[in-house]
Image (cartoon, rainbow, N blue to C red; front, side, top):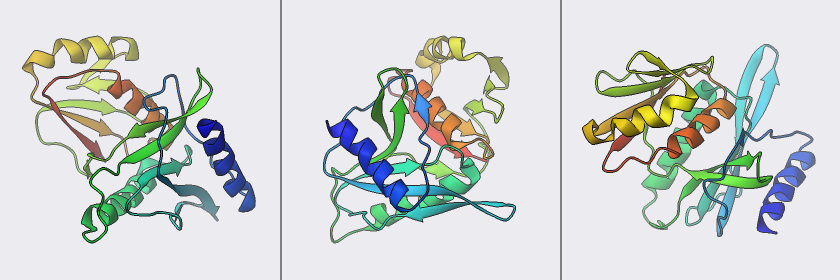
Length: 205
């Protein structure tokens, strides 16, 4: 019932503004339920020849879990700067800070047909190319490169898991021109790889 409420809430707000947010789709659920939440919306806008990301955070409360509902058509070069601003606002809050409050992206589980969430509270985005280390790069065209070698999605888990004992840090990189929908699908793929004692970083450039 909570999932249905979340979907209806999103649609009712979208319809109230006479616009839609097209949520990304992925094939598994990472987190099924989030309570004590504040929804934040990033809309897809077109003005003339320009694509814009418009943020609506009127209902965001610092002490709650934030759910970011972002249109899948938006490119990362527009989405990530807005996400960074939101993260900074929450991290810099001192007076009403809630250490337990998390940040999540929402998406639709295309298999189980429910609203799902993926956490990103501890992600610190960097907007330049990493200079060293193990690099996994997700291209705009859906290609995965691990240290400049092509890897299929089917082999991705095996390649990364087999390197687990050698890895201390892994850098996940995304083409800034990828759409947000592809980004979430790749995030879900990354989450499926269990790495112990490995620090991960995210780069968008």
